[in-house]
Length: 149
Image (cartoon, rainbow, N blue to C red; front, side, top):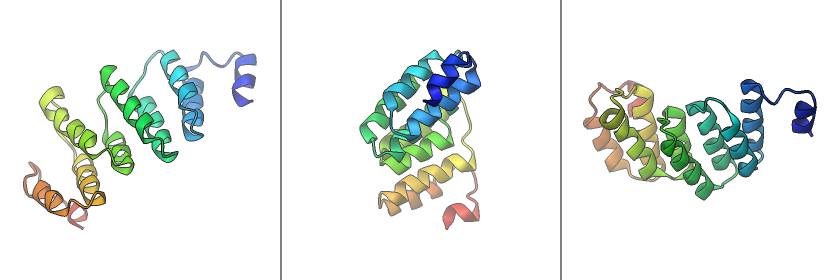
C-alpha cells in the first residue's frame, strides 16, 4: 500500500525512497521485492545490500541471506562490519571470516577494531572459543578491553 502511494506520487525514482522501500520489504521478509527494488537503485552500496542480508537474518531466511551476500560480492561491493555481524547472527561463520580476510588481501583495507570484534563475536556465538582466543592473539592490532570481554 505504501509502495503504491509512492508510485502514484512519482517518488519511486528517488534513491532515498527506493532505499527505504528495500529496507521495508527486507524487514517483512519479502526478499524478492527488496532485491527487485535494489536492482533499480542507481548506486547499490554496502548499506543497501546489508539491509537485505539483515532482513533475511531477521526473518530466519538463512539461505536467502547467503544468496544475497554472494550477489553483493558479485556486484563488487565489499562487506562492512554490519554485514559481517549479520553473517554472525545468521550462523554464516565461514562467509563472515572469508569476508574479513578478503578485506586486506583483495581490497587493501585495514580492518578496524569493529571488524575484529565481529569475527570474535562470530566465533564465540558458534562455540569456537579457542579459535576466538587464537584470533585475538594473532591480531595485527592491539585488542581493546571490550574485545577481550
